[in-house]
Length: 418
Image 1 (tube, rainbow, N blue to C red):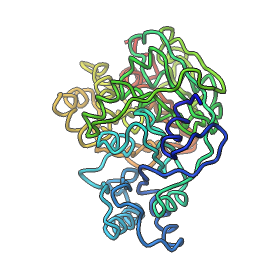
Image 2: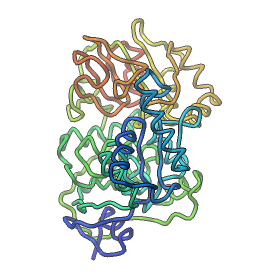
Image 3: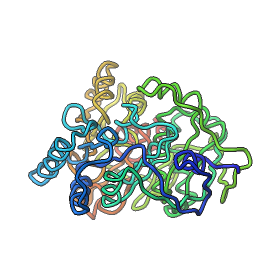
């Protein structure tokens, strides 16, 4: 049988030939949760009568959403997680100085990679498809069961093939590609489907660009967003502590539910307007909209390549008066690398605030909450009503370059306009 990437990974993991539509039990490579979702998972774990996790080295707990603890409630949440991690001798527990945004941290540490099956109590677990993992978000109760049993079950998803060809223009990258796709197919266009990315544009895209795209598969309703594992992936994995990974590509003649074709050479900077990620327009057509805040960071675009992209736009420029420019490197290693490269001098000269690795404002948590009537442009992944604060605020999603350019202009612009 000829397999898509999703079918191939699940067939390998289950030890039998599976196809779209089939329900199958499946062992998991890693179970993930954070400071918001793990306390409920722990409660469910106890209620099941479970006494020990299936493998203390294959559970990851990342305290990234409301940390550093913003208030008493968040401190209590983390305390529950910390005590469970100590009790269960969890190897991969991250808090404080070793903690970063989970979906940037785990690939960086080599904890996820090609052929893995990863489930996480966070919808953006699909990020790891950027390195060839079948990775998807689940509820805390499902995660609790997997922590106890080491397995879960899936309905094998049908696959939508996304064929992207052509050379990317200047200032256009992975964020623009995924926004273009979501704008075309809608927020439910890939509901419980696997999005499988390919084409010469994908071949030439960096691993960090692929992670950005896989991250937002869920914004199209996708179960997973999958990229092949090529030589570029193998090099990334070896550099991040996972040598020996094997190549992964779909079989020629695999069956797809549909094929979406994108000519990358014709794209310009894209922006998702309120209040859905599929309300996508060219940045140049958004209109003369002044902004109050610009955020660069998150599990979507807080990696070193994103910070370099923003710095290239901001160098020698300043954020417009009245614009709060917030920059949050996604992990301690990224934070340190940006410091070594002198990016903070550029950011601070531009009038930015550089914060610690945290999800922070992305979910309306802290460090950048919007008041009523305020408007932000952000490199994050969701712009639902009230996502970053007040129900009367607005969030526009864009690339690091477009977000930085908008901060300088004081309104939403295409970075090419600078």
